[in-house]
Image (spheres, rainbow, N blue to C red):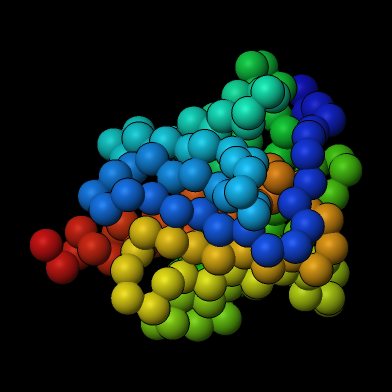
Amino acid sequence: MPLERSSPFLKGLAQFRSPLFSRTWTLFQGDGILARAHRTVWRRTSKIVIPDGPTWEIAPAGWGNLEVIAGDAVLARAERQGRLGRMWRIDSPRFGYILSARSMARRRWRIDLGDHPVATLRGAALNFNRLDVDAGIGIPLEVVMVSWHIIVRAWEAAAASRA
């Protein structure tokens, strides 16, 4: 699939929220909705709908790889670095970021541009239905959405292992 240009950026504070026991998440910034996402766990995919914009799919592309796809175009790729899934390279011809776990137990992640942190992602203290995002600079929405997909997948795996 050819790589293509992407979309909106996220800057500032935002929050992913999901109703209890739901696989549908909404990304809010202030009172506005930036994106809606639905996870299909058995396929390991997520469908992303940008209001008044494109629809994307995040899907596996081999062992330890993900693609953000719009139609036939690949907008971004994520590749796991190492076996534990604590670090991912997220890139396209337009950008290159690193998603890394700062604390798996406390559900804290960071997005870096080179050696510089540009965003933090924090899970809620008492539940798995919220993820706060704080982006100091504009970050492509594909990077934010694939980061969410990676983080939430790990939460689902942890919950399943306890069941």
